[in-house]
Amino acid sequence: MTGTEFISNLNLAAIPGEENRMSRRYLDILMKWIPHGVGYFSEWPDRPNCGHFFGGCHWYGNETVGPAEVFAVASTSPEYEEDRTGVSREDLRDMAIKGVRYLCFTHDTGPEDCVRPIRGMGRSETWGNKWGERGRGFFPESQCGHGIAGLGRICTLLRDWIDEETMGMVAGIHEDYASRFGQMPPRSGVYADTQMEENAWTSTGLTSCYLFLQNHPQAPEWEMMARRWMFSTCSAPQDAKNLGAMDGDETIRSLAGKTFTTLPDYWAENHGFVHPNYTASGVWSIVQVGLQLGMWGRELPGELLWNRRRIYENLKWMVDGSGHAAAVQGMDWHYLPAVGFEASHAVASVMFGDGDAAALQLRGLGTTELRQEGNGGRLYDEDFAMRAHDQQDPMIMREITIRTPAWLYLFHRIFGPGAEPTPVKDLEAKLMGVRVNPHAGFVHHRHPCGQSSFSWRNSAMVLPLPREGIYTISPCSDSWLGRPRVLDRPDSQELRGFRVTEYAHGFAATMVMDRCQGSLRQRVLVASGPDGRLL
Image (tube, rainbow, N blue to C red; front, side, top):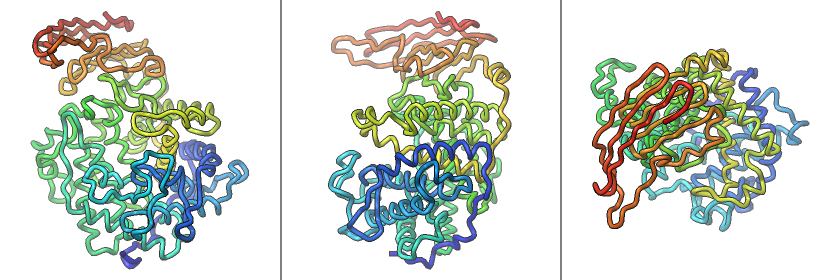
């Protein structure tokens, strides 16, 4: 096990001592949730001074590291209100540290006999074993980067209260992660399944490794590799032809190589969809990596910002009245996450000085605040969450996404409130118009009554959305154009012809597609008018 000799001088890390208008709003979300979070904390008797949240069993340790970071972060606020939450700063720190220790003992690097409880609130695959996912392959092992970075931030924030044993165990977890990925090149993936999200969380984990273990002899190497993962989070095919310089002697072409994660028009597709949530993951990766660097007073490297503004511009045009981006090819994951969907707007507001993004962030944040208020401080209705199951997990485990407002709280506290919001009327006028995305395969029209889109790739569909957006109409794949079935002829999609004509306030498009092994031909004409009517 690594000792404490490689740990950085944590006293050199700092966050501003004052709140601002945006950090206060995220702090308010945390304080409303904390009384409920306390109810999901339990002591873990297998080792001294340990505890976990939500039964101690979920993917990658997220059930405990998320709430623990929320408690640690809130305890640092000069405006934290003990009387309001009923929980003292000392108790917040105590539960956070117990969570860290639990995760250390039950990680792959911990004692062999220390495993998670034999029954938890998450899926049974996570019961009675360790996290860290050693031997399970790149996807699950690398995804622990979120949790490892959380452990590093908690230890940095609570350094004055954490003992040497715990620090040493956290150091060992970081070294273990770096030994797996500190020399591995980033992954490439554009069509069907992007590698954007995977590269993002790996860069997050490696960033924590080189910042937390700055005295490790391999720390400079880990930093170099972390920056490559940052760049390759949002790399596009055209980067291979870009001879412009990045930092130092590197060029864009040399950094890109043959590793790409976005389509040439800066969209990302995952699970066979051009997917707004996964596309946004490349932008909001700046939140986690950025706040880690900001705590240490480090400049954000060019690799972390590469292509993010281009990607964000795609998302901005498609935000509906609740703050969510339209799913123009459908979606197979949560349409309406309770928190965090405004993170890409926060990045653009703070890092790019984008007033439009600031206004859209407020729109999404307002939806989050109303939703939390309606659930009495929780993210989801308690009875619903205990009974329901999403595509993967029991819904109660979605409460751990409270960690996202904690990240945004720190992000704003470190980097400030961001740009002044564009007035709503001006914003709506700026966003109107038609945009064609030839590689993603859809045309999009924003008009005074909402949005209209026509997709001819992945999921051939037409989606009219009112201004209220996906709170009113669920963006089901294959909408309007259907899923044809022909006996003994499995479905297939072969585009025979497509043409789109753009107008100042609308579009007209035709498509000819052979389906079901060529046994059926679809001929489609779509026209979107200035007033939002769709033919």
